[in-house]
Image (cartoon, rainbow, N blue to C red; front, top):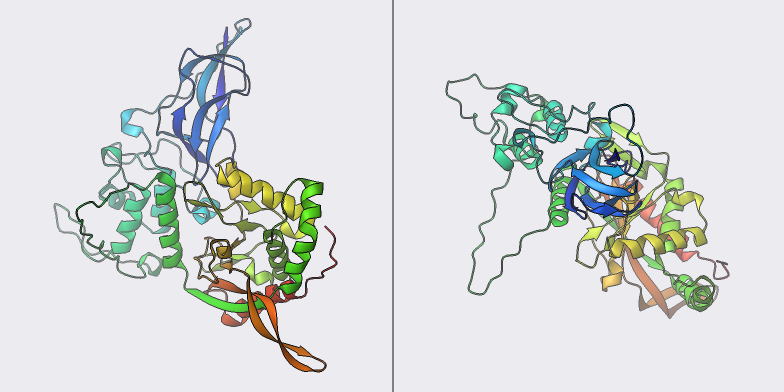
Length: 445
């Protein structure tokens, strides 16, 4: 038998590594080609690695909780056939206990992945053979933290390793008090970039009463929490509101939904229309489609609309409709339905949640009339769609003003005031409302 490696597949241009969650096959088990052998996790998506060969799983190269870089072997499969004349390639050495990466996936901030310095080798150590993940090293370089200072940061990870949270907490408090050392040292001179914006708040004390239940956050909930706190810390949020009359849109959907369901075998919702209107408005106001990198503004060429979806376990995930401005309404509808259905059951691939440039969240699906959503970094804006409700409204006619029952909704637009001023943020949400209000009731789909 010849042994062949099963490699960690490429899962998107910004994903460099993944965590082993659970082995689906044990050593010695027979596997078929394309049969899943191991579950892996990236920032938000759990996925599976299928076997590229039929044979026997002879070696698991990593244990549960270890981090594997893209392109590295995770297992060895013995296949039927003659043994190659040349020795089989030596698989990657399993990290020793001294260099086992932290169990959690540390790379959650997409900006850090896209704009970081070249990644460090997998087994990067400092004095004393202390392991540091590539993300921790990138943060240290960005904040001007040298290896000697990095070695002094207390770690809460396995065997005292420094996690992403450890170094971010250190950066927040850096300069508040001198680090504990055996000999006095001169105070460090901090660069403006390294100075924390605000003091880190002490944890709020929580009292427990009889019958209270303590629930551990799962991995995804922790990542969401970190991402939301980071977004609020980095971006000054401002929200503008517009009320839109979408009576024509509601009447149009009521007219076409049954015929569309019979023809396509799926529902036509309002979400594809919202995505279509936002994509058109971004073409009108391209400076909404940007990201911030230090003191630089990155203007995005592609219009990739993220769509917040609530999963069955209560967590939130944001699949991305790539190049939404190039699709017609039918194409957007098919993509929206496919991504939403697979998002709810956790069947998205890592690449399908990467690369968003703007996000929309439909708070109206929960009966909410409006919301103030948190920006999905590294984007600079997000729109919340409120519930559509019948309300009396004033209509201007050639015979004078009249009051009529209309279908009304609120659009809430949160944006990063570092780069989006009130004029731009307000004009953008108004333009989205205009496209919805001017909907042609004879539109074909």
